[in-house]
Length: 356
Image 1 (cartoon, rainbow, N blue to C red):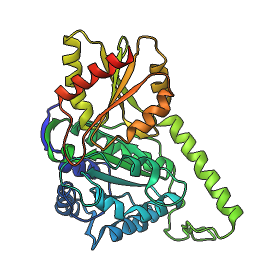
Image 2 (image 1 turned 90 degrees about the vertical axis):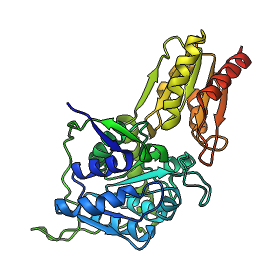
Image 3 (image 1 turned 90 degrees about the horizontal axis):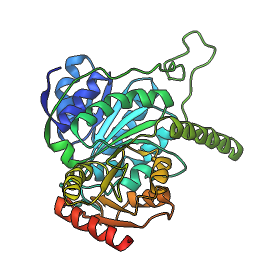
């Protein structure tokens, strides 16, 4: 199969169209503006709906409405814009509506910078809105994965009636790479007999809601959601390990830092240091069990978490997975600065030395 050269944001948009996205609602913000730009041109060509909303708040509520009627709905933004969408996202999760949300992360907090960052990990994996809810979070480390995950995200969302977040740092959105357009395995999806499309021979119309005035009823609803989240955690967790079979030092990273870490592994191995990479692909559900099993291996002496955030955010999940079995060091930058191969190599050596 021939490869084509694509820019990350445009590839994500094209992947959504190929996945059958019916409606896109969004607002331009760097570094993801190419997504709505591409959608504005190509969605109408496919007979689909594109709306540039008046704000990010409007966009996510349009997604709520379209998803409620059974449409495959999507929005995209970058960090500050995703913050504005949080109320709508918690409503969508509570109403059990499927949708796809792309966050092309930039440095923060606040308006921060237009350069890439990973400071939205807590927001994506813990839920930035109110209440107890979860979104499935897929973290691509290259454009091929961004394309594949975007196409699969719509099926995951429909399978569980739940929002799915594509969490990519701004570099993945802005860079260009060769990719293959290949068939993504299709899931057997449940019928959308819950959608607000009229009676259709029934004696009732469907009602979509997230408000439960009776506390017992609200508690029951939350219990149902929790059961769903447990099922997702069993079925959808993903990770990748590289050179971990004999590694004394394990680097943990996702997105662009994971790519940089791969080059650092080559340098470390060439210098006689046994290093490996553990890369979570689903940030939620997080691959806690395989990480715990890896940490229990006698050849593993220490971990080094590498992120583009201040002080680390994923490191909390690394600590939960490792569960005190081995020491964990951290290397990171925020505000658009990326860790270098040289920094990772030196930090890995230091972490391993301190563990011995």
